[in-house]
Image 1 (cartoon, rainbow, N blue to C red):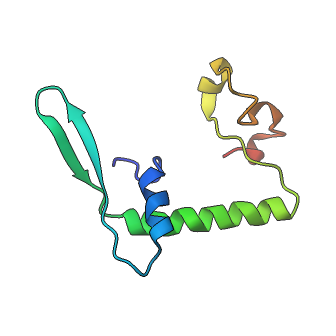
Image 2: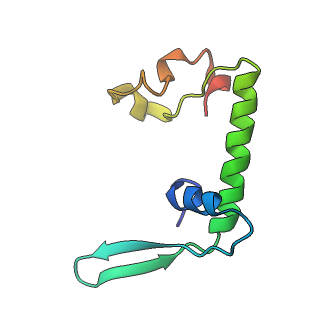
Length: 98
């Protein structure tokens, strides 16, 4: 919840439901001493709209011939075995990054 747009799972589910139905969502954290802890995602509908708009923008970029953006960030990519999958090795410059 510190960075709500980092995890898109609940936002995707809310986007599938659409704006016509009120949506509530929560994460369940598992704590060894306290058990299950419910953490409400109060902005899930807003995050769903942001997610859909971002996908639409990315699809428009692809239609215009732009390449897919890399997903990795920073020096962690130097050690990642999947860097070819996220296209990090194909960045032309920092301007093409995330």
